[in-house]
Length: 311
Image (cartoon, rainbow, N blue to C red; front, side):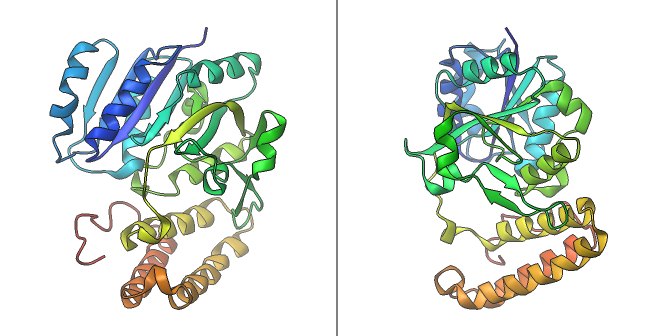
């Protein structure tokens, strides 16, 4: 049977990462190694899970980063560490992803039955229900120039396994040889769009995600779209622009399309009353900064999430 390492990235959500770890130990097929990447949490995460780390010392590796490098940095260092385990597969997730107990068993079965497939994912549920948002985690690439994706429909899940170009970094499983071939996630993205950038790299080499519809993940999160802070929107917009400029096939399109994207962002600031009410001026500034940084390839941790008063 194929072996796997599992990476969990966490930041200041000690209860969530504890539950995620306990779910891992209930897997019908156990991970050879579980790597917990702690993004310099300040809520006592290590102390809260220290008993688990001690009782499962051979199976769990705790990796604490010196500073919060976001999900992108966490996945980079977690997958880098996982490669050292020399397993066949590497699975990654945030701390709010709760795998069903047979998730990896079903993923492994699909991998063994489809040796040419290089990346796999399950189906995401939100509080035990598949919503339009969770179903849309799987996406098809519409354009090699603008790198626009279209969500898979709920109907696509009804006819057995299928293939998509993109999947969120919530439970994907990669063959280790794929990671060795295309490299690690871009750690300088900090958060957001790192999964899409990785998918574009896969796409350019002809690889897709195999969606295993019987493998389920539950998203343990109550964050709503209208609660997204502007600093997160900054990273998502900046990283998308950077990716389009770098990987878009038609360079005329990939260098001009971001201007259209910026105009749409400006329009959304004025048209989406509930989302930007009371922070329109800041939103305009944040989208402008994201545009300029993306166009000039300025990546890294440009905005500190701890500076909530500014963004």
